[in-house]
Figure 1 (cartoon, rainbow, N blue to C red):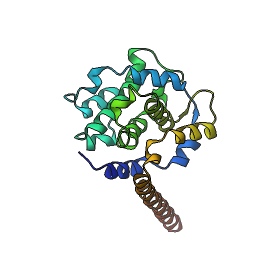
Figure 2: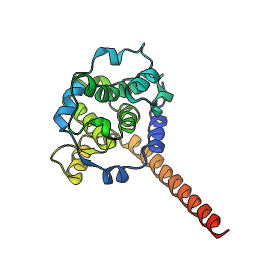
Figure 3: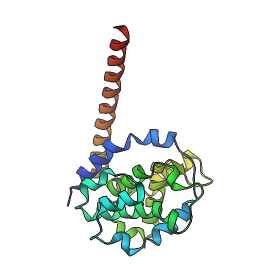
Length: 202
């Protein structure tokens, strides 16, 4: 099983930053509709014998970063629940707007690498607050606000149920990883600009 801090570090590298995520959100499905689907995840999706790589390929037509950590039951279950949310649109009916029109792979990784390490996915189906946290997190990283909420309200309500924020030591470690990932992104951008400037002056 992977260390929680390693999973959070992987998420920091993958996420692209929370402010950017909030900036690209648009009105999405209702929080209740997403939470209801989490509570109804079929056991087939949670079966540990099912390959997460194959499941992601079937549902998304591509891969997710969290497959690198699929030996961790938390990651596997968190990703499987996220994949169920996307797959449910073809099995039940699409949400409005459809989750598949957003950043579904990123949202699946958010559940697997950001939420699951600090809030056991087994609790998402039975505990209202954990289910709400998972639903809100999925919507954010998929690029949606819960229907009827603005970004400030949605951010405040997600922060209020954030399991990571409740664990101060982990939250501080995560903030350090997030800060380093932001610096790495800025350095990459500066290098690209410098290379482009050199190229255009030749």
